[in-house]
Image (cartoon, rainbow, N blue to C red; front, side):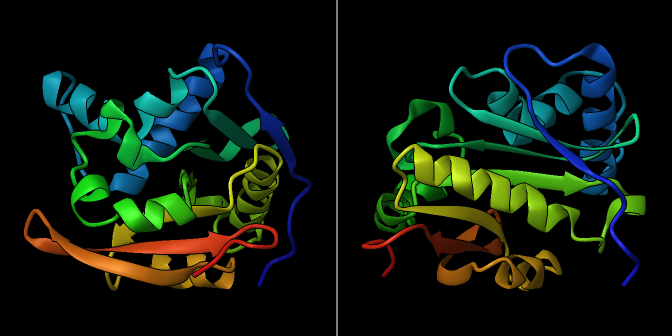
Length: 186
């Protein structure tokens, strides 16, 4: 493992500076592994997985800054997605994960630029989010990802464990939860 560069974790309050936003979006689309032409499909994909967090007051956006570069980001919400209409397009929250969402209501979306992976930066972003979620009174935090995906091992190393899984759009997704503080858990 390469040594970790000097990283500053910054919480974005209000609108993100345009340069940072462009870097976050570049990381987001690169990590998706999908190529999009500018237009409606690209915009809908961005909104579903990133935009809803950037544009909602009270949500958390953390940036990992190395030098003057955005190395990665974490966007998350501190409240239960199964109880919010803005997540109704992700029907697994209500149909399969409503009960675990009550125990692990805070949730996140995280990506790093390829040059900054495997350096401990992702863990630092998750730890910063866990602190904020705990301070907000969330008993736990979760992430939903594809079952068997490479990132599952990363989340497990960050203290998450598989709580539930469900079919969604022809594949299985997994709900990974991490308890925060005493009294949380399963």
